[in-house]
Image 1 (spheres, rainbow, N blue to C red):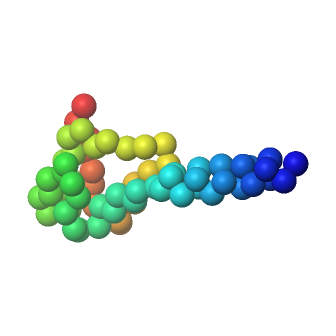
Image 2 (image 1 turned 180 degrees about the vertical axis):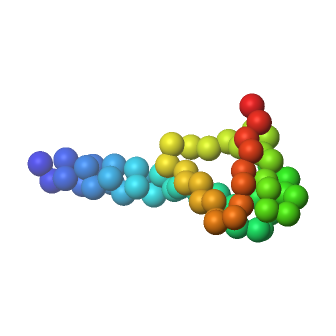
Length: 66
Protein backbone atom coordinates (compact mmCIF):
# COMPACT_ATOMS: atom_id res chain seq x y z
CA UNK A 1 0.00 0.00 0.00
CA UNK A 2 2.80 2.39 0.87
CA UNK A 3 4.47 1.87 -2.52
CA UNK A 4 1.21 2.80 -4.30
CA UNK A 5 1.07 6.12 -2.49
CA UNK A 6 4.72 6.78 -3.34
CA UNK A 7 4.20 5.93 -7.03
CA UNK A 8 1.07 8.09 -7.23
CA UNK A 9 2.94 11.03 -5.71
CA UNK A 10 5.90 10.52 -8.03
CA UNK A 11 3.63 10.40 -11.08
CA UNK A 12 1.85 13.59 -9.99
CA UNK A 13 5.15 15.38 -9.42
CA UNK A 14 6.58 14.36 -12.79
CA UNK A 15 3.42 15.20 -14.72
CA UNK A 16 3.12 18.70 -13.25
CA UNK A 17 6.77 19.63 -13.80
CA UNK A 18 6.77 18.48 -17.42
CA UNK A 19 3.71 20.48 -18.47
CA UNK A 20 5.13 23.99 -18.64
CA UNK A 21 3.12 26.50 -20.64
CA UNK A 22 4.80 29.10 -22.81
CA UNK A 23 3.40 32.62 -23.10
CA UNK A 24 3.70 34.51 -26.38
CA UNK A 25 3.48 38.25 -25.65
CA UNK A 26 2.75 40.52 -28.60
CA UNK A 27 3.42 43.84 -26.90
CA UNK A 28 6.16 45.52 -28.91
CA UNK A 29 9.01 43.10 -28.28
CA UNK A 30 10.36 40.54 -30.74
CA UNK A 31 8.69 37.11 -30.84
CA UNK A 32 10.49 34.09 -32.32
CA UNK A 33 9.27 33.04 -35.80
CA UNK A 34 7.52 36.41 -36.19
CA UNK A 35 8.43 39.67 -37.88
CA UNK A 36 7.27 43.02 -36.59
CA UNK A 37 6.55 46.24 -38.43
CA UNK A 38 5.43 48.86 -35.94
CA UNK A 39 2.44 47.39 -34.10
CA UNK A 40 1.79 44.61 -36.65
CA UNK A 41 3.24 41.12 -36.26
CA UNK A 42 3.35 38.47 -39.01
CA UNK A 43 4.09 34.91 -37.88
CA UNK A 44 5.05 31.79 -39.84
CA UNK A 45 4.90 28.34 -38.28
CA UNK A 46 4.25 29.37 -34.69
CA UNK A 47 4.55 26.01 -32.96
CA UNK A 48 2.34 25.81 -29.88
CA UNK A 49 1.42 23.22 -27.29
CA UNK A 50 -2.02 22.71 -25.76
CA UNK A 51 -1.15 24.73 -22.67
CA UNK A 52 0.55 27.69 -24.40
CA UNK A 53 -0.98 31.16 -24.14
CA UNK A 54 -1.06 34.10 -26.57
CA UNK A 55 -1.34 37.63 -25.15
CA UNK A 56 -1.93 40.49 -27.60
CA UNK A 57 -1.59 43.96 -26.10
CA UNK A 58 -4.05 46.70 -26.98
CA UNK A 59 -3.21 48.37 -30.27
CA UNK A 60 -1.21 45.44 -31.70
CA UNK A 61 -2.22 43.13 -34.55
CA UNK A 62 -1.06 39.59 -35.33
CA UNK A 63 -1.35 37.72 -38.63
CA UNK A 64 -0.62 33.99 -38.73
CA UNK A 65 0.34 32.38 -42.04
CA UNK A 66 -0.13 28.63 -42.58
